[in-house]
Image (cartoon, rainbow, N blue to C red; front, side):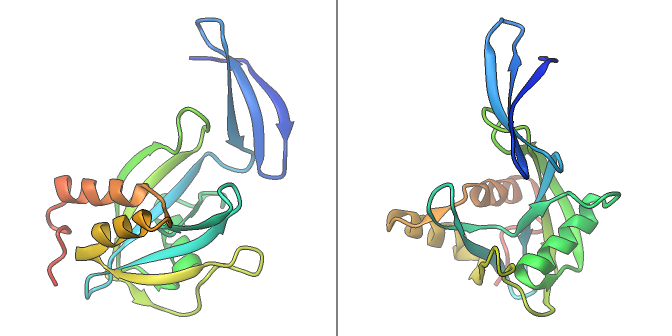
Length: 184
């Protein structure tokens, strides 16, 4: 495992760094300056709806369909508390239950950030959502049973969809039969 990290640039939230690998090459990647993890929330309402957010992502210069998500950047906040906080902040929903699903690197080739994916069940709308003035987003509900098909159609028409949505659906299908498929 590489040890010596060289910082090439430090911004407000990100650093560009490089490490020398055991094979002797330099590997560049990005790391966050304020945290090492983020939570991604796949929510389900009692009637089988999934809230997704759509927000412009400057890196791709277009809106992207995504699961509600956010950084684990509050000191001493655990995964469940962060998931609950981000679900309200981004989508306006409270969850009855949070179920950890899996943790994975966000992009192992280019970033040191890890993602903790959770399922949030028993969602109840509690009020305003949609980000803030600096980072506006739209919240839309999708029927869970048609979610994969609907998002694939959107990709076919040129819209951008975060592929983590399909990853979570597959994990639910294969390992959490008590939650998926959703019964209409």
